[in-house]
Image (cartoon, rainbow, N blue to C red; front, side, top):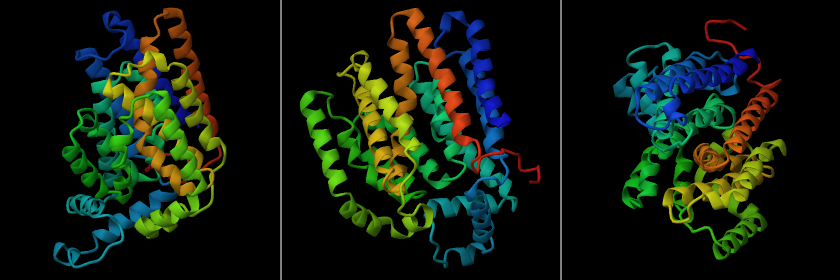
Length: 358
């Protein structure tokens, strides 16, 4: 668990250092050299941890085998084959394989893509970039990408295209979802949320959302049958139909409560902030559904990135400086403690690099 602790420690240490030498920009959310250097160093730390990770997670060997399998065909043979995986993912494997037959470069390049797309949005929209990165590491997609790599690539693509969601550019957002679906076909199921995430937060819409949620829970089995027709092979292959442990829903529910308590700090006339607060509900909602059907928790991953933005926003808007500092300290300790507890004794523990043999 030392590696996971050191990742958090590195981010906090770097953030503290750059905040101290850049007192005029305590939030580190504007365009300056200090922010750029902080992001670059942090990016390289996470790229090292993700790109050069060893095969300790369950999907590592699967992705490694797929990489060699796809590249066992010549380009002429390649286009005559019928593959199970999505075409974007397959072509990416083939492109990397045309340069090298070392699977480490596959993990390095996919890690780079995910990190670059997430960091781009943090730079653009986060009011506390270092907190967004800390959230990304501990409750976000960073470690999750060690296993469900294809989906996290899709999530990062949709997150990177969120400006079309904010600007209400439907056609461009559909194109982004299409690109994401080339890596994970469940991306299409997020399309209706182009409209749902933009609903104003009021009593009428809250009642409507709760009603739809109860309807979903009551008719969950029928809805699952519909979803299985759409992604039948994938569902059976990845998750099965058993439920997750209740601990998997604790953080999403706690975040939703935190957001609702502080909802008055969020501007209802801001489309961007309205989308973030609605995303916190769906993040908790699909996490709760995952307690019954593990597969459904995966949809929560599409809403998780907005959590990495709304929490720093709430902290930023707290006027009392002392209270703000207390919040930051509490959140930091809770994140690190939660991460170490959740990963301990799992397939992620112990962490080791690809050049270490276990």
